[in-house]
Amino acid sequence: MVCLNIILLTHEREFERVSNTGQWVINALPLRSERRLWSRTAPDQALVNDLASGKARLVFPSSEITNTSLMDADTNANSCKHANFVSTLECTALVLIDATWQEARKMWRQSPYLQQASLYPLLPTEPSQYALRRNQVPSGLSTAECVIALFKQLNEPDNADIIQQVFEQMNQR
Image (cartoon, rainbow, N blue to C red; front, side):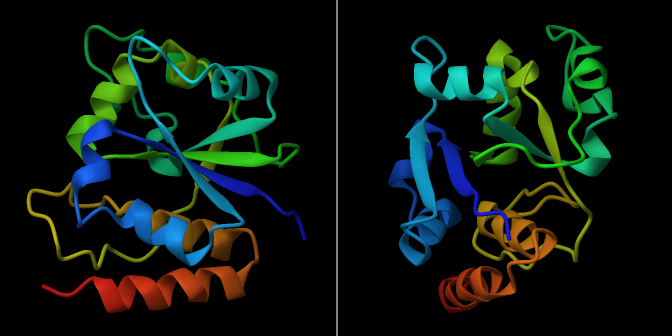
């Protein structure tokens, strides 16, 4: 089994939100996950280096990897298509953007190092069960749901179950 760390690249507003599912992941699996603050003007240089070298891969919905609708006119429409798509893991960490969908698009647009990162596809899964926020993208998952799906995809059902239990407990209105 490949033992990968999960890095949550977190928008600053998410640190204050009790509905942030990324924190649930950190609390459930502290030895396998960590949070890093996203900054447009001062990106985490270690993360930038790890993404550039391939030690880390950016997790992306597989349906979005060739779909340029994620990007707007300010973004190079070919960056997603020309990203180094990875079908096998040779890295030590997987990076997920931890933010609302609107904030995640902004983070992507304003972070060239994310646009150039090697991608790891998150395969389609069940629809989101997340109930604590409104105006979600119809096919979008919360951060915790992405990590659950990712662990299932990586054949780590025990870790997926740990986060699933926390998710079910916390996902109450």
